[in-house]
Length: 485
Image (cartoon, rainbow, N blue to C red):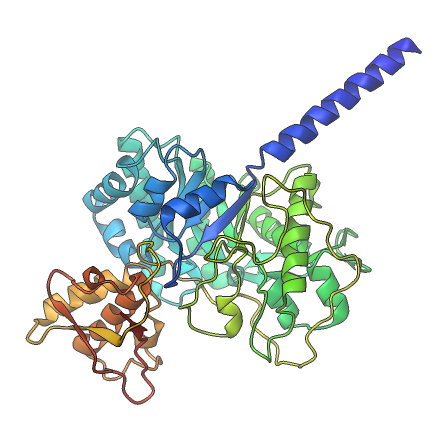
């Protein structure tokens, strides 16, 4: 009997030590730091905020020197990104890849704990066939550059996908990739498999609820009490949408023969407010989703197809991005405010316990909407982090100087769109596509970069080829974002 009691005590002690380890070391919880905003706190303050939380990894959409430096010697893992606009050069020129690694990795590593490089964001569902074809060579050249710098085993390389890469996701066991993408994905997955890098995906139960706004769907999305959904092929009962979406990806990977490729959730979140026609966007629901998700991850229960471990998950997002276009919800994902206070408490602070999440179903917004896309609007990376802008004085726009050559304008256009701004307005069908000239497109992109980078005079330089004007260059339905200086 004494032996049994001793064994029981030993097992209890191991369980306690595991619980303490999990509570202190939560490497599976990360957060996204988007910067399409004009009111973000200085990078040093953001680094301090992150250190005060249980978050151990942060994903940047670019490779901002100020933020990477601010995170030096904090122990926080850093994910950096190469912009979509860099993919052609990375794919075609190994020397460009080496230069990129020298500038954005070697200059800061290992003091800044860079753990992963994302080449592009949701490229496979961009409908840009040229970019899609160049993605794998770009990824390979970045990996080769890391290998030459003896960092190949220390820093992984991958890319991020939207859920739209799946042709089917219900039931989870029937998850499969879109046939049109299978060949390209096979190349990328072979790379993931060979290098041990993850397959990164952006599941958003919020958007799934938008396409099926019933109370039982909301409870399923928010990890709240619900009847569950049974996978008819496996008889597995799913009790939340997050597990169902992740397991659909697992099934798709398994079906292609890549059972050993790890999944990372690069983005997931819930907006705390939205436009009047956006159902479910509320503080109560955002708190429930993110808080219950964190509790689910901390439980280490895993998903039905991947039990016993938690998928690395990056919450979206650290702050609101007040300059993002689109629906109101796009500017309301921030878990923290620019003044570093919480938008709502989900137990991330090291000095607090996880709050209890609502037990009763949250009330959906009453206004019905048309079914929304099951995938989110791609989140654009952004330019360099900035200090808070000075108080408004007068509106200004950044435009090219008179007399520039098309070659110089094209350089400015490539530079601006390559630094993470949303250039969709100057793509075919966009409000600013016409007139289809390099001068017009460059002007729009240069101004957008200026507005998102902080509206400082040096943000409108472009090697001394740009100037500020108080004359609004907007025309017809093409609106140039404006700010005050």
